[in-house]
Length: 115
Image 1 (cartoon, one colour):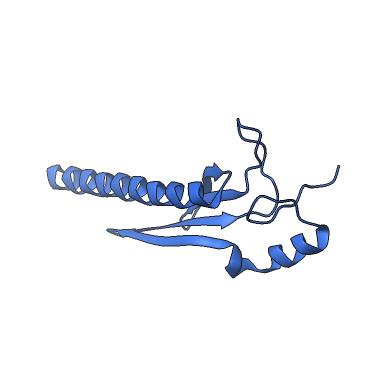
Image 2 (cartoon, rainbow, N blue to C red):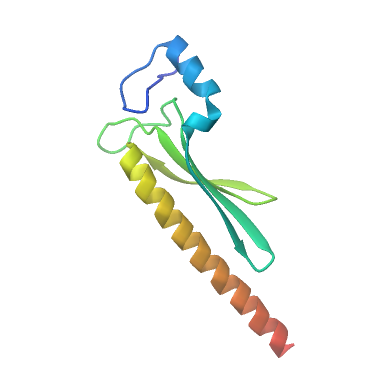
């Protein structure tokens, strides 16, 4: 089974186009934020994948992906059908991760103060 390749506008790409796109790592990076809260550092990155990650409920290919990583793990937290949705999803991920990290760091500080 061959992979389905796409351009960022959602139009199918040839294998040659896909190879060029895949090699353009900087061009595929839509957004990247480094979140530092206390001693915790997390990176949120959103990429154009070139390869369809699966079909969304509307039958469109999933071509954008948001990944959260720290020094020990990487987690896929969002997949999108369009660049616009990926931009919004990235911003939401950054906000959510920042909020959760602040809560965890504050809770840890409170627990330390109680000990």
